[in-house]
Structures are given as structure tokens and as C-alpha cells.
Length: 238
Image 1: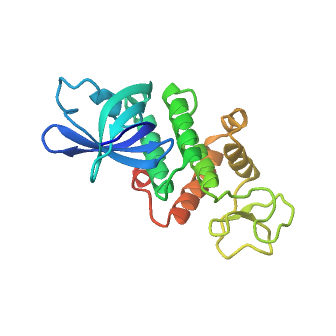
Image 2 (image 1 turned 180 degrees about the horizontal axis):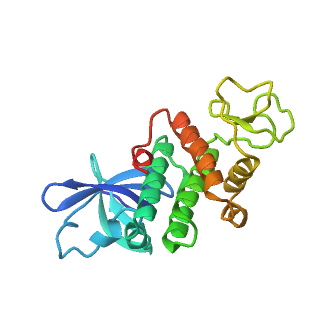
């Protein structure tokens, strides 16, 4: 059976038998990958800790009939302990890995892989508010998947802004002529925060106050789940 190597982020694990686990990865070259890690639940396991959620690993695997098997794993990013030790970081990280899995179901997704690794690295450092980092990741992940929202001109007719109403189904801000009944109205500061998060402008994003973060976060949650077509289990628990 042929051996191969991959770099992967651990998204989730599940028990298999008495000592094994099935590990779901987002990999750099193959997209989503499910593989068996034999014996990792034993205390004598040499690489069990390297295959916990949020870890980034260099993997050696051999191909199997149904599931591939991990034969070696070395740590490239030890983010798991730092994220799991803090409840807010853990909740944000859970949303990130669930979203990455959902957005990468169609095959190789190198941009999603790079985006997730960068987000988990920053989350583990703990220098940016976890919820703000989560929201920035969600916007940029949706953009990488082809659903980039617009916060400058009206996303329906192109009328130059600024505009304050947002419509999730249309993908961003709309002018007065294009808005639909019940469309929420956000403050200019909230719109600016959405633009900063989409651009990865953290110097601007971290200065936002809780009101504007809440408004922006509400739009981001609704926008993400609208395009994924079903709710994010981890986001409902946030």
C-alpha cells in the first residue's frame, strides 16, 4: 500500500474501538481527509497529543481500502493546548474548524487551509479578542469560498455608499431603493468594522466597542449560516 505525506489541521476526532481514533483533517493538498490513528488512546502512544483538535501536523500515511492510516505525525503548530485551555478561545476555535470542514467538502482547498492555520495561530497567541478573531475568520473564509460580501456600494444596484441597511440574502449593504422590509440598519461604525474584518485590518478592528462588535457579529453569523444552508452547531453554542 503506497505511503504519502501531507500537512493537516486536526478538525475533530472520534473514538474507534478501544484504543484507536478516526481523525478528520483539513490538509494542504487533499482537502478533507479522514484517517485512522491506531493506539493513540493508550497512555504509551507516542503521537496521540499531536492529533488533538486545532493541532497542525506533518503526517505520513498509507492508503487503505476505506480509511487511510497514520504512521507518523510531527507537530508543525502546537495550537491545541493554548486554545483548549481558554473557554472563549475554544468556542471560537470550534466555530473555525467546523466552518473550514463545511467549506472544504468539495475537494482540495489550499486557501482555506492557509486561512485556518493563520487564524488558529493568532487565536492561540491570545492577543486579539477571540470573538472578534472568529468573526474576521468567518468573513474571510466565506470570501475565499466565493461569497465575498460588500460593504461599500449597494450590492444590488451598485449605488455608491455609504449605506446603512444590510441584507444577508443579497450579501451586504443596500441602498434605500434596494432594501427589503425588515432589513436591519447598522451604525456606520459597525459597517466600518465589517470592512476592516474582511480586509484583515486588525489595527482598526480591535478599536471597535462592544455595540459595534455585536452588530457586526450578528450579520456575520447570519451571512455564514445562510450560505452554508444549515446552522453551525458550534456557533449556536457561542
